[in-house]
Image (cartoon, rainbow, N blue to C red; front, side):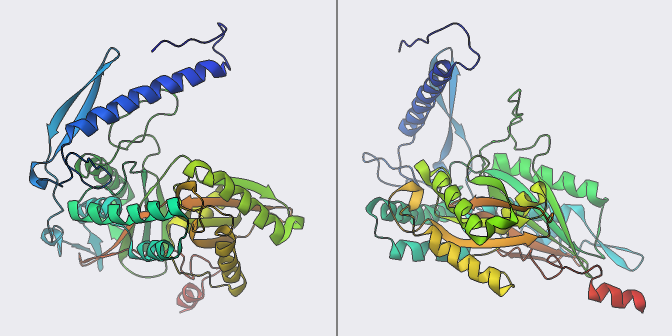
Length: 422
């Protein structure tokens, strides 16, 4: 293929940028084609008319495509694809240490639990989102949107059966950690973060996950989704208790997020306007991989507003409502509003773009009304576990992040003030 660009200045040379993009697209298309030809079976989103059978899972292998000069070649790489063995955490259970009346949670229990969570998040669609998606499929009347929704449901089923990642782009893994006030962890918070980074790196190779994390300038890639500031680890605390909740979320890191500084005079109508502007921008060409859970953050400063919106999208389940009845009414209205703009699955014509809408708020500067909008894409990858001080591990899909304590408005938490007085 022979192409050229005009001019000799590469700065702001959009034609040159287009040429680079075209060359990359050709390279990726060749790699995808070679990999598809190497797989003589049909599994998940990969389907071949000449090899329609799923084949033997135990004989499956990964396909590695490498490039030498301008030519690509493929090579199989053996690899076992198995679900995690049941009871993998049992060996660590009860291996807790007592320190002065408090029980210390062993770091190996935390790491093994984190590894299981990485598997679950990448492979198993949460029940709440699956129910919402099934409802969307039942009510969708757009031809292409209906096709996409049915394909998604079939792909989720195949992913769970084959223990493969439900989407080729496995997003950017991140962690939300919440713990009771009396919790003690072997090795402290530094050991905790090291365990979560190890679990992320191991899962990248083991699930496997796509190694999406690179240096922003040099594009350095350690092939394990770990680097400077990656994976993100955010913390929350609750009064009382000796337990730690680990939540992993594999959220896309490209499109589906926006922010705007509004003013009090913009009011609810201004919030609606920015909400719709964002959905239309997200919906074009399916950039946000909808239908999605939409999270809206209102208030705070710019950074906390973004955090509120992302947590609203990722850490609340479909069907949950804000405890403020007026905000809950807005959530219902915004869901209906988002599904009335004529866009459906992946940007095709339809009426199911929003599976649910969650709004979280924070007190802000009196002169502003910050707003962020976040789309948690059609995979909605999250998994949660609580590790108790006695070593028990309980898995679930509801992070239960936004508790009354997390939404508190008072200086003192009533329970803490009473304990201090006593």
